[in-house]
Image 1 (tube, rainbow, N blue to C red):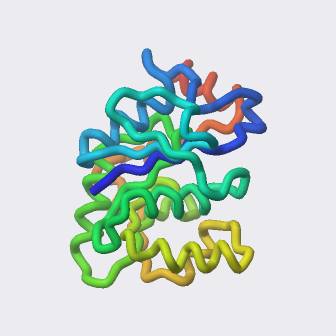
Image 2: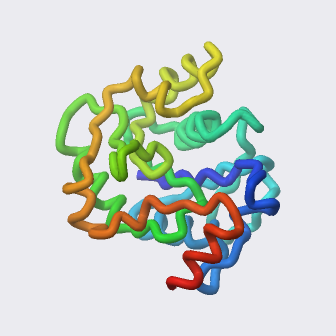
Length: 196
């Protein structure tokens, strides 16, 4: 399984590149990459431009659908893996408290049922498609939805065979569900750093 980190967002509310924000002695991007390196054999970072970040041993690719939201980033990452029959981890770079144990749990569900195209956590009243597992063969379907004008990931997922992982199941590895906290504005990061 490959790990795909999405780092191509505009960071409009943050006012600066979220991927480079500090978190526990690293950047948010380095933390996301590090968590996925534990559970995957390689990590791909999807950025706005291929030369945007320098991460030793990590392939950085330019988003083939820039400024179009995370759905284009997921499609780009799945195209880069070029493994239609394999599941891959997808993670947004702005989730500083995500832990590799969550991805190990999702992987277990991914292999539990034949024919799945995505395994998506469902917690705190919503789904979390940017901290999930996708099979490579989902890429043509997602791309077709994108080319038809769809930009919302949760809408595109309606065309895939998806397994939703419940809060109770997620709490086995993340009792407080902190993995699903993301940082969109400076005050979000400040609150997390104060509590760390």
